[in-house]
Length: 243
Image (cartoon, rainbow, N blue to C red):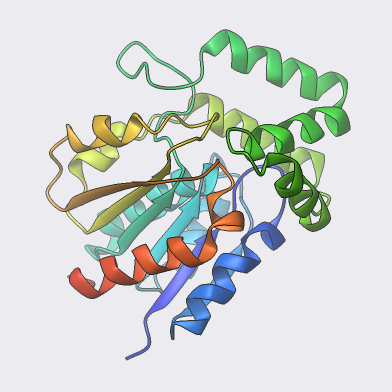
């Protein structure tokens, strides 16, 4: 039967940035629905997304989208005792460093970014796009491709997204999740250190797998085929275990 994937984008750019990954997965026979980030701090909004996500076999997200995917599989497990396959791409379960999770953005750096966004959101989004592409030799051409796909976002949604990035700490949810989970990191990522992969492995969660592949934070946009190959291999070896 055709596996169904719910794919959640990251902060700042809209769903078009994940079109290459969506199309690559569809070419491999998956049904893939793309959704934008949402304000998971609003219980009603979160529950609406939980009901949507229940219809899929795998919940996948990039960056903040990976954190949102984690919240969804956790809520589905608690409410319905259903265990969806969780796949995250270049996603840190705790984006801003805390006492128990130091492989993350320093809180002072994030505070500066947030303040910059308040003062000049357009310029800050451009800088963010640059960071998404940094770390690789193709960063200049990658940035042009990214800029051609970025969609304007409601400022309120972006503010909610920043609050989530600042406050979410999902390490315990990953450690306790008993469904299949697969986390893929980019070796040259300047926003999410690939050392997070080792930290996740050390959680010793029941069905947790990690991979690190070459690329920047923009992995799903610039390395969609390689990413799809990894995801296909994983899903073939680890079919969804419901119930």
